[in-house]
Amino acid sequence: MSIGTVLNVLRDEFPEVTISKIRFLESEGLIEPQRTPSGYRKFSAGDVERLGHVLRMQRDHYLPLKVIREHLDAVERGEAVPLPLVGRQRTPDDVPAPLEAPTVARVGKAELLAAADIDEGELKEWESYGLIAPLEDGAYDAEAVTVAALVAELGRFGIEPRHLRVMKAAADREAGLVDQVVAPLKRHRNPQTRAHAEARTKELAALTTKLHAALVKTALGVRLP
Image (cartoon, rainbow, N blue to C red; front, side):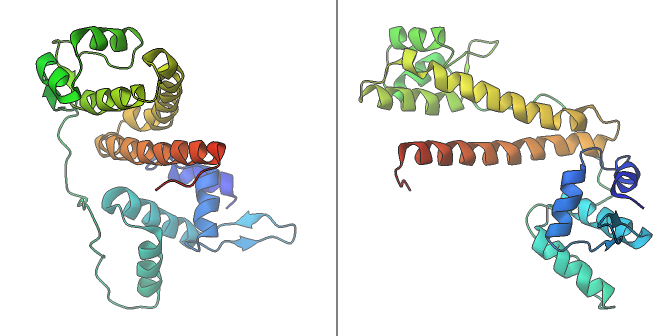
């Protein structure tokens, strides 16, 4: 099979899989498709089955690629090896509960003001720039405490809230990119796939945050912890 055919075979169960993902798994040694004399990949039924196992262990058991590769290699050698237990696990028989809006820790306005050591005037100004926003009931997400503390700390260096609008805009664009990537998972008819969207969102959020920090360090030409 060509790589395009393999993609079509896998996408019914793994709608998020891409050609780039398949090529990446090949580069990591998870699969070794044959090559035609002209260099095109040709996948066997065994290659596709192995790909399915890899993607399933990533999705259901959150196993690192190195662990998956070692496990599958051992199985192919005929060794009776149990599935490694690494991190969060989910059995195939698990039925995720209906997706609901995530429950978030909340703080009241008074708690936020006290935690960040600011007054209502400062909070109102920060809200006007979109740096902090109340929830529908007037409370605040607990993460707002972190944002408020950081905004206040930057203020000590003369960086005003209006200067931070560019950072808020960048964060919104990064969040939009993550939403775009996980949108197919959220819309999928398979409830397990939809449940996996939250884990994928957290993973992508962590990666984009690290990349953003690395890019800022590079642009400034400094080494930070």
